[in-house]
Amino acid sequence: MDGFVSRKRRRLSNSGEESSLNQESSHPDDSTDIKLAILLSLFPEIKQDELLDVLVSCDGSVDTASALLSTQATASTPLTKKRAAPASSLGMQTSLSSHVFTTAQDGTMKPINETVKKRRAPPTKKGQILHLYSPEDIAAYTPCTIVHNFLPTEAANSLLEELLDESKHFQRYDFQVFNRTVQSPHTHAVYVSTPEEHRQQTSEYTYGGTYRSNVRQATPKLRSVSRQVQTVVNEEIQKRIRDVYPGGNKLQYQSSKEWKPNAAFVNCYDGPTESVGYHSDELTYLGPHPVIGSLSLGVAREFRVRRIVAQGEEEANKETNENKDTSPSSKSTESQETSTARADAQGQISIHLPHNSLLIMHAEMQEEWKHSIAPAQTISPHPISGNRRINITYRWYRDTLHPRYTPRCRCGQHAILRCSQRKQETRGRYMWMCYAGFAPGKEGCTFFQWAEFDDDGDPVWDKKRIEDDAPTLANFSASQ
Image 1 (cartoon, rainbow, N blue to C red):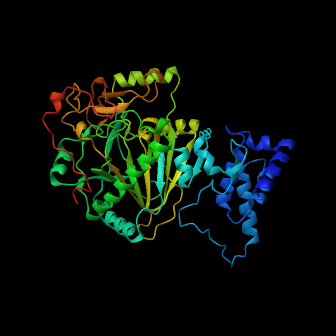
Image 2 (image 1 turned 90 degrees about the horizontal axis):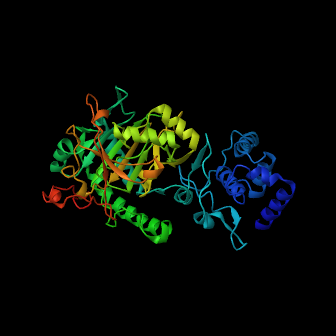
Image 3 (image 1 turned 45 degrees about the vertical axis):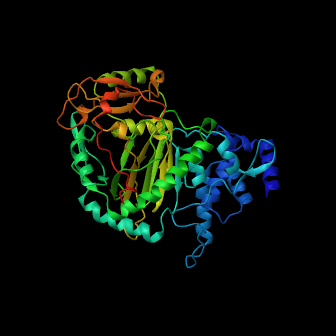
């Protein structure tokens, strides 16, 4: 097979067809391999050499080749005979890259998944969506790790049933955009461990400039699963530091301590139209370079990500002016028009999240990328949840960022922590700023101050401020 592909490549190169296949790729030597990998994932029963011929005949277009192959498969398969299903589990795909061979730097032919980690991912194209399914591809091309079939089947289904019952008490939160009060396009609740933490969450911690009334205590199964989440997330953090980060060192401001979840946001998306727009999660209590473990249950949905690209000087100046005024936090969903335009201009990556999958958003995610749950035209109902998806985002609130320590605005409201993302000169710097103007019925002030952190991401401010010894949130696992 390797020899055939090599001969075919030489023939394509001589005829100019290879150039046509690779014309849109930033990695000309490998783009055909990637396209083949996509076709192999969609048509695992077709041989690689046959897929390559179809791809060439379609001028390198995966969409055209896929449509042609689908038509042929439908026409040649009797209606009374079911086609053999792939061996992989429902909603889970084997690697796009383990079946396709590419030329390594030493000239030998190796599976693409052995070389993909050593090069940068091809950039997404304007108006296009790159769909990723396998753990290898997701880890290589995004700041995320996915673990399929995370829990034993019975445990996953029991947790789903428990949280579906809880979702009857979920609420939509309100926020203000351009003097209009709008509601979140899905429901949610905040979960903590103890009654004392419940009191703190409703009277001290703020989200989007307001206190949340919809705070609940962790359910038994939610609490028990947290131990497994904690173990796997910490293992994956160390793998990413070792295999991906420069010199095998953690990122600056990333905590060197063990990640211990002590709060969770549980979201419910009821039906294909419920969604959340592009955003970064609020850093106020998580601190710089946080890691979040996100467990998906029920209906499979698309988790889309896009890299934050520094804009031109005009856009940068716009952000500067917004920062001096009242600007939405990273947590707030962008206006639909702006979000769609930016996503279309930069391209998007879609990660498919099946039932019982754990997605780990690593330390660079919130500062350098935005993420969303895209509305869907149709979804495949889940046997337990129907059209609903339950998502648990386990978070680690830092003791040093308790709301008793964080700055207050001149208007008396809690300041929020943001990262400068678009202005090139200040990109990566953190700032405390007012958010009150985006809470319904409130007006913000012009409060702004740069935030300083040590190498572990703990705030550098007057030590007297933390002598109060504010109560901290209990680790879910430790409170079992």
